[in-house]
Amino acid sequence: MKNVLCSLLVIGLLSAAGFTGAKWSQAAEEMESLPIQQVMLERAGWLAAITENMATTNYDEVKRDAAALASQARAQGEKINDSLFKELTMKLATKAAALADAAGTQDAATARTQLAEVRATCGECHAKFNNN
Image (cartoon, rainbow, N blue to C red; front, side):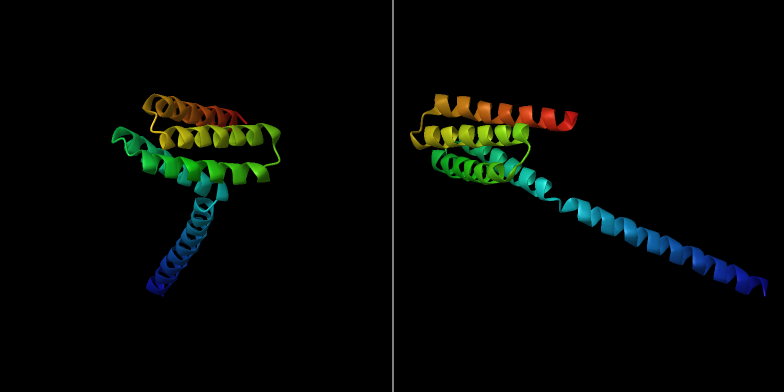
């Protein structure tokens, strides 16, 4: 009888732990797919590719990625209601478009300056976002 009770207790505890683990796992999956996180991951990918292509002077790819970043930022900026974040997102779109233009003319100095401004705009937004 004692063995049966211990077995039932162990089974009950393991079942409860499994259920709790499943709930935490589900919550983690939901958090991973937040739309803003997907937007930021996409932007980070473009910035990494732009940086790599700038180093190898592959201006066609820089132009393509910067134009994609500008387009995505512009589209996202139009959806934002908060004026500060809208302003920063539209600023990012403008800076990324300027980077694409500089890459299109293969103007290395201007492209480097514009890339620095894109990064500064990202940093400015992240600083504001993290303080709110």
